[in-house]
Image 1 (cartoon, rainbow, N blue to C red):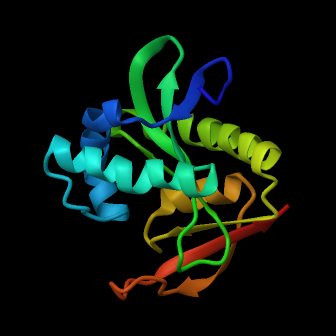
Image 2 (tube, rainbow, N blue to C red):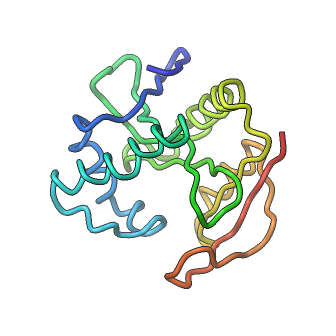
Length: 169
């Protein structure tokens, strides 16, 4: 565990989290707002954990963290944390939740917890976030945690327009 409050804990993902990541990445909201990453087996979920999440921890010391309910330690409800992509100058903050845990306040609570941890531990000077223009839930959460809309961008080869949010610390 990296940090916690009275309701939730954040901890690094491991290969043992493949079933959870498989479920999360195949949820309707993940596919709609983040994209279908073709994670159609537990083996592909393990590979994704290894090649994205564990690689980010190794390369940058930060990454995405699984969110666990303290009163149900075996229940992972989503992920939040940071990623550094080649396409963007600064690290991004991000989040995703299983459908049963969306719109229950866990987004703000967990992302704020990750931000507090990240600012203290990694001394971020600027954080970014990207989201689809139609993802109103994400936009509201990004604004609630203090990021402001900057501009529309096309950061990836897929040609999709995204909204860029940022905050300087």
